[in-house]
Length: 244
Ligand SMILES: [Zn+2]
Image (cartoon, rainbow, N blue to C red; front, side, top):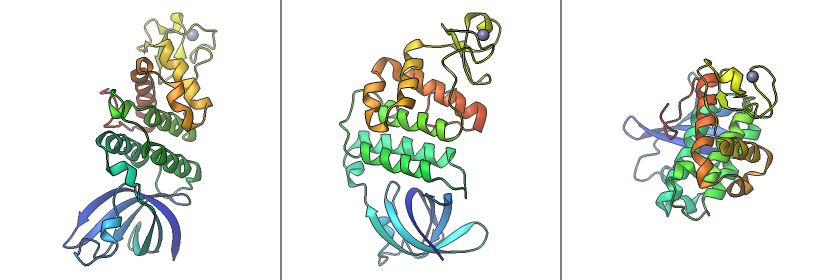
């Protein structure tokens, strides 16, 4: 028997009346579970099993890697996420990053705390004029997921030769910023200094302070650096991210 808290990352219809859930848990990381009968009109749990909802659940190991849910209780319905289109899309970006970056069946306590904190912040944030995927909490979550994954970009000195700043380019292969000499012919792209500063600040500060770390002008660049690192080192391309 598995008893754990979990956040629903995704819900897929399965068969006549079942649902397959992708869940994020502290102890098992990402895990899939079948909720039998969840889509019957009489089901008590069906309506609760939506993306972004935080549950306490019990389940048993089923066939393969699939858990079979036995019972669920809502810990946090995330109701603030559903009332507002901006928040809904920002939450979607966070759930997508969790879905694609956090490994299956591995301890993920830090990532779990990060994602639940991020959803709670988004649930009460004020909509911005900029796209929801560039929300400071979304970017802060991506940058902290990089750190949890051991992928902090090196931005204090040249990631290729160790030379001092100023850095002129960003190379995901080298793992960070590169100096003007290393940029030449390296295939690295230009580094936006404001984005590098914002990324360093996002890493250093609590997620709740992300709006103070990233400006509307640096948000695109932060997203780009995070996207390049995820793609190069984890083979993950985030749909919500800038096209690569
Ligand atoms: Zn260099």
